[in-house]
Length: 108
Image 1 (spheres, one colour):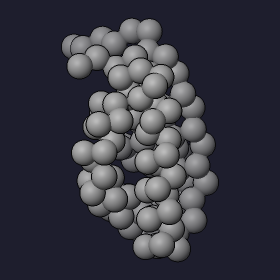
Image 2 (image 1 turned 180 degrees about the vertical axis):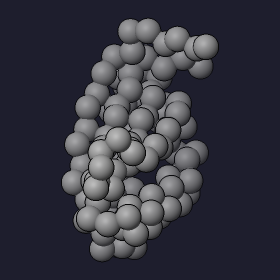
Image 3 (image 1 turned 45 degrees about the horizontal axis):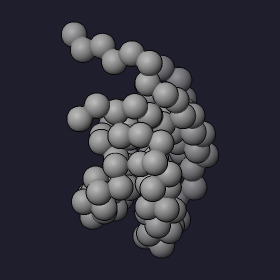
């Protein structure tokens, strides 16, 4: 299935330990909710550790969606996941989100 919309969220943490624990806990929550995300139209999530910012502890989360309707449908799931995360941890992060329409998707 092709995606037509994507979002990229960077999260900056105070320590490497916070980053690791946050990533593990967030993935547990996303896995618990994966069938709901799929039904809502999410196609793919890719998590990366940003390594070119010296002294920073950052993760990048790229999400791909079937279309704008799927993106909107997933927003309530994200709010639910964030509440679960906040209940399970006390890790603070600075999040910055960008969104875009996919113009080219090149596979090598």
